Length: 156
Image 1 (cartoon, helix red, strand yellow):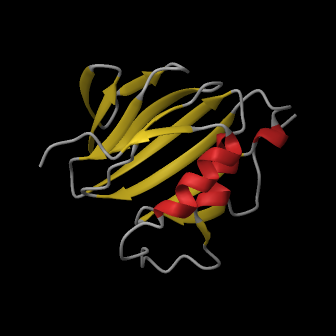
Image 2 (cartoon, rainbow, N blue to C red; image 1 turned 135 degrees about the vertical axis):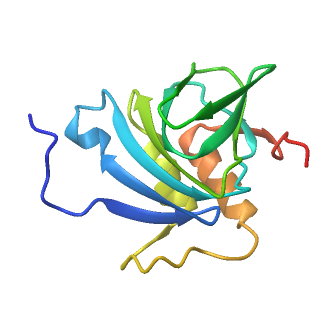
């Protein structure tokens, strides 16, 4: 099995950023998936729980804050944040933008992004503007077993 591909990754627009599905679970027998998230400053995810997946964020560029359980974790380029399944968490981008590699085990979380996001046919550098479609995000979460607990828990 190889994880190198000459195809462009699947790209989706969500929360004003771009999500690239770098390695789909179908390529790993469902063991893991690898996503790349390119997010603008101020992006914040709702507080949520993955009941079946562990996530590991590798910050490639920028700075983020992650609420994991009851602890706030600041991470910048080169740092890693582990998010065990079953632990409430949320992410906020603190720098003008951030690029994060998101390793998810087992695979499956990529389906949430497909349902919640909009496919990007051509990368133009223009990101989605306006308020996120929370009804669509909540529906995607429900369909994929993700539990949304509430709005982003960050101040300011």
